Length: 66
Image (cartoon, rainbow, N blue to C red; front, side):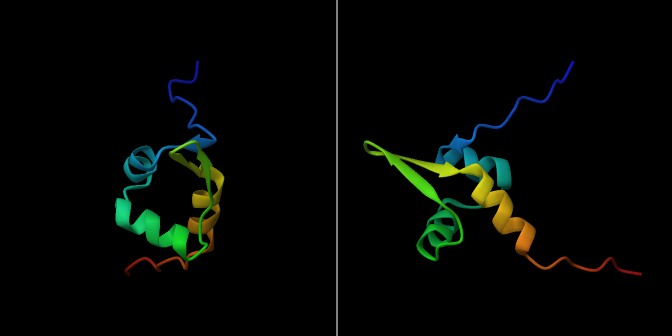
């Protein structure tokens, strides 16, 4: 049995902040720059989780210290 709960396709800003360990202001900056996507449902903003994962996959990787 899989004990890890599936992460939602659309998530709130606090949930994204907690899941990816990034601040709320960083999320809004990423939205403003077009790095990640969001949808509005009434007054609520939901972040497209896949867009955050895709953005992180494009970032350069650090080399391990020898």
